[in-house]
Image (cartoon, rainbow, N blue to C red):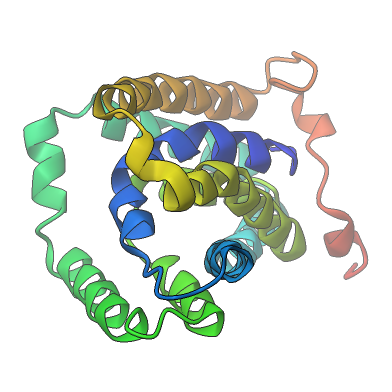
Length: 235
């Protein structure tokens, strides 16, 4: 998958962030900061999230590089698309059960406790650190983005993909943290309804790309799926 698509996934997926991480963004302390300090603290908070996403992208992109070497990138793309499709078509009652698993509760609990400790001061540096921790919060759409990072076929490209993803989520998250209280609840609900549609379209793209149907950019033939430049240097 092209690296720049990470930004598009992040931007359109950020409407989901309003519902998922919006309450956290709204709860960020204001304190007695000036307007400039307030904006800076929110920017640093989002920058912290981007750093964490980039770190995950580096790891997942590294594994993706191994898939390219093994010649199974096309199969991985199809499997990833099928998993995304399965998740978003899964009945809501089963999705809810995923949120009560031990790993999910462990990570969520850690983030909540960290939030309680770090937001007492409300300083820009503190919110930057919390942004880094917030990036570890379990999120289905982040997982979708990481799936995209795998298909980039390289550690560096995977990190760049996730950095662009985080950058794409920033406008909505920044606006929510500053003026989110004025966003109508009904609008938030309507935006959240669009997320499954976008995710299903993305899953279809993953599957088509893996099928190598000869469609330029969307589903190129196998011979066009070249390894990342960094991989060529290792040979």
